[in-house]
Image (cartoon, rainbow, N blue to C red):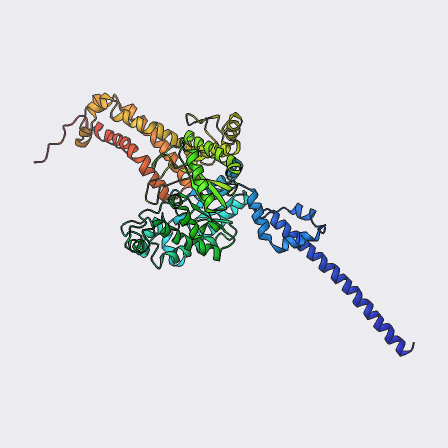
Length: 566
């Protein structure tokens, strides 16, 4: 074959090979591009719950029918995410961790139940249980969660389809911060640790630092609650008095000016987070003051009312005001526990059920009555302390039956026989009587043993002690505090109440030890000691002391009391 012919065929072969390679490359590139779109679409579809549905991924591998799907997914996934949030009205269960914060192992049991009961989110108020670091490390409790613990909480929440919303106080209720010498100078009033001085140059940077640390550990959360309720003593500090003197005494403007700084920081640095704030301070302010601040663009008020017989007209007047101001959405807050008394042991289910019936009625009328402000969700608060310094309210396991009833009411509008049947089955009771606050049966939910033993302590411990100390003539007459102090008594009389005293002491000692064991399985040592000292020891120590004195005095066989020392 002539050389020119060979060169020609060689060039032709190279061109054919290049053409084949080019065609395969285009085909492969197109296939990967389409798979990338499908994957993005899958992520958007499962974004809210963090789903990982492999089967659905395989079903969607065929190319989209409309090219516009490609544009929508790639152009603005955030809008699609927001659309999904708009369609879901949130029911957040509040975990108040500034008191009796549970161990992570309890959350492993609790979160599946919350999801099953109808909750779809958690409002977590960490306070000093958050693992602050660096300049903020001093804020941590001795039993604060670790960073790994926070990761575990978020993982458990995701597994159980519970959206986590951190609650970080930013103005009032800053006791856990301002109690420390390091931050004492930022108090609004030097003697009170409640509220920040909004004029101090370091106040806003401190809040920003706290928010940043919390949000960096919650990168996928979609909401942040900035608290801002009950800013006590605002305007009473010297800096505030000077500011008010220069601003016509406009206390409302002072409040929203600081909040604007917080809201603006979050919008600039965490624009994907929707912001919430308690509304009680806003109720007091004039419409034009709030409008002028511009905060309505970036934050939603959370209207909270916890009592059982609140005025719907009053609630709607607040909603109307927030609609006029220009807030785009509004949240409500009820209470399933921790709102009936600062030191209550038991949760009054009836009170909280009535509270939720009224809220459900308001929720149902929102679309027809308020067209310009969207109802976004409700937080069922479960306060554990009234503030950082107060005693503990009802423990979380004690409030579970009330929470279950309240969630059913939000779903059905009432606690009817069908709801009662469903909840008694879930919680392992025989029946639940909301009117009398009685749950019959042992229960079979996380912490049910604590629920039962706290019920017994509340209903019987004080009564039994009273029967021993005040209700028994023989004990009052022959085993009085005077007899016990001076170590003398008549065995003839003492033996008549020996069995009753011994049995009462042994029965309560056994129950209290069992309760302590259960508490220690859920709570850290500081919580166990605090709860026992507040609610058990004052009564049981009387019984225990009587039993010990009895054992000391009886063997003395009626010896004379000691002669007084001259």
